[in-house]
Amino acid sequence: MKPITEFYSLLNTTTKAKKVLITMHQKPDGDAMGSTLALYHLLAKLGHQVQVISPTNWASFLDWLPGAQQVWDYEKTKLFSDAYIKAADWIFCLDFNVLYRTKNMEPALLNAKGVKILIDHHEQPQIEAFDYGISIPAKSSTCEMIYDFIVSSGHRELIDPELASCIYTGLMTDTGSFRFPSTTASVHEAIADLKNLGLQHSPVHEHIYDSNSEQRLRFLGHSLLKRMEVLYEYNTAIMTIPKADLLAFHTKTGDTEGLVNYLLSIEGIRFGAIVIDRDEERKWSFRSKGDFDVNEFARKHFNGGGHKNAAGGNTADSLTETVQKFKKVLLDYKSALN
Ligand code: 5GP
Ligand code: MN
Image (cartoon, rainbow, N blue to C red; front, side, top):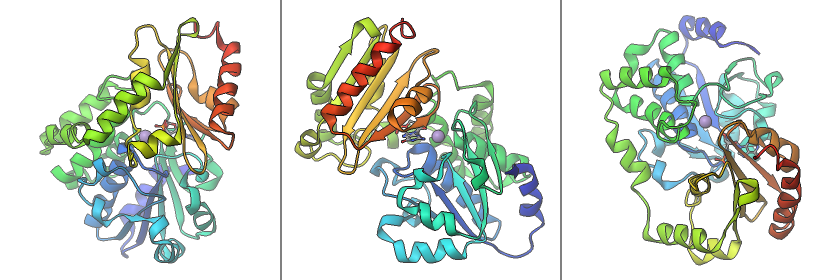
């Protein structure tokens, strides 16, 4: 993988409009949607033909993002998408480190001949899969890296309020609204700059955090009341969501987002884990405070990864089996968690 700075010269010297694909991890979150759409606006302004393809659908609280209506869901557009992926000159992979995070899109990406560019902040990227790229786990978000990309490649003047709101979305969601340790001075400096360029930040918070359905809030209440277990001797809290709950509350994509953060809001809790019984897998989300490394934990025990304080994993085991395994594995972490 060559450094992204070498790609800037390619970007700034090309005279021909390129066919560009931009993609991100499955079930894109605010950072994945925000970063891909910010880059989409930039490259479209530079005259390229650009298509964002998401490996799957996304939460409806991201639908307001400028450009979201033009994003293809790979699972619903496989024929068009495969043809587009095959013909793309440039393929940008944003907010993921390993190709399997694009789920059913992985084979098409592996076979694609276009120049592949990685922009990401997860640990241990699969660098052999990319031609150019930048991976900085210390960065708050991929959106921050897209801001850096735009400014360093000399295109700051192309940032308008819409593009700025895409960048702000990932800065806000991946930093837990500017509270995680990843919120550096550079994050606040980038936001100050976006504000000077016309960013309206309040509507972004409202779109994302004040868009609950009544059902979603009741689902949250039910989960906190009935599905949470606090293991005080391990400073750990765990939430187990059976499929029956997902059906009973008619949950939609995104409705389980953020649930895991409630676990860490209990005083003294340093490790929060939630497992959700999805059709195809049991999906884990792990969050921690301080030194406890959930990226390592997810990699070692649950086939996953991510960041030191936020990671995920998955298993084909049943819900009961995977929770039993979690509790067994946790025994070895008592001192690390105290
Ligand atoms: P979340 O819990 O919000 O789904 O994910 C937390 C972080 O871990 C995100 O940065 C996400 O990209 C990463 N992550 C989630 N699930 C997986 C997984 O199965 N494998 C890997 N490598 N990373 C994951
Ligand atoms: Mn991210």
